[in-house]
Length: 230
Image 1 (cartoon, rainbow, N blue to C red):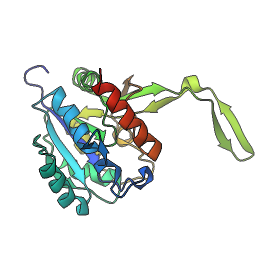
Image 2 (cartoon, rainbow, N blue to C red):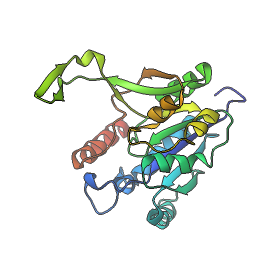
Image 3 (cartoon, rainbow, N blue to C red):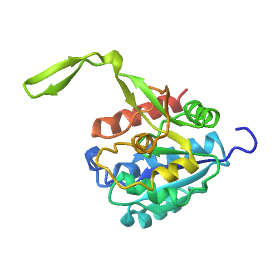
Image 4 (tube, rainbow, N blue to C red):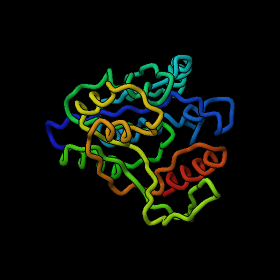
């Protein structure tokens, strides 16, 4: 990171994560013997040890997270805040802890395999172009759109799958989140775009999966072992 560049990230970990199975929300389930959320935090700390990290948790998860940090001797500096009713409100609460200087990323806790290469690509583009940046990958499946009479084929070459981290000039994103909640907000870029911010796409990574289902958890454990054995 160039000197004078202030970087921060909000890691959204407030969901219940029940679709992944298990007794605990997915962000606290173990991958390679360590809770998923710790892998995600470590990814950003590894990229830049000066990165200011804010973790958004549900109100009932704070004590569990503190216990997990003690048990796993997890000492990477981070600030925890309580999430809201929706992802929009959770990110808004996280932004209250963020300075207007520099840029801020928003990242899913359930994407623990994000690389320093991808983080750098997103943050550098946001700095250089003063715009919102989202990583995307190509759609490889055939897709159809539902219609009133059935469905129709869509050219998958025109589609991109959106990942995180989504990165924005901090001052502008804080202003964008002052708007009222809208059900059309599916991610942070949709909030920023409605406010008027330009959005730029950068190349994402296939390994930057979002862990959602029990099968994803199995794959995550396998992928972690493959990486560890390199």
